Image (cartoon, rainbow, N blue to C red):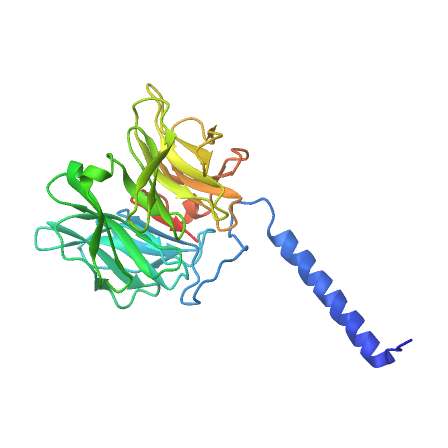
Length: 313
């Protein structure tokens, strides 16, 4: 029988007690709350903010901000009059992808990136009108929509994260009206249309409808849960208000998550336990993934009206 020396035994016991106390504290911190999420994903320690968003609240120009979900750490990243839209944090949190207006008459909307601390803004595309940029899960590629002449001629393009290798993945004719794509897994993107939700293969090999709409109405802003099991999206049934719904990744088990009038833009919390959204396009709210416990998010007290796009990491 091996005997542990008294000093070493005390050390191990003390270490285990410290570990137990630490685990207990961590568990208590991750309570059922819509405050700052402490279940972390890999993220570069540039600012460490939970959300990035766009608002014109300050001076009626669209600016890019980062903040913590509890309303602390508010930092404005853009100061010019160009105007920005549709921000998305990179998977490691080090960069922000968004759309920015260019030209004297703001006549060119292009995909742009900036470091999470507000430095090194880089224009990646030079086209008249691009939309809905989205990171690949590993952060090495960016997909986006390119408008030729009108919204009905949108095509889906892909490029490397530095802007090189831009090429069309799907023509407008092959997308069946789907748009607002988000990169769901390394193998496919998801998008919505008036007819339902679509799965788009990232290698360009095909597109399929996996959820058929309940009626002729728009299904938009689909977002895959962190565990890949469910998809949240905005939907407005006939003669009703816009609300948040979820379905399983295979298109089954439709569930209505919110009721009343909701502005949309659903985003999953990093642990997938909650869904954040805009209430009436003004206040930040969140709800448990099963639709229970809707609550106003603390960030609404610090900065409301972030209704021009946001992302939660």
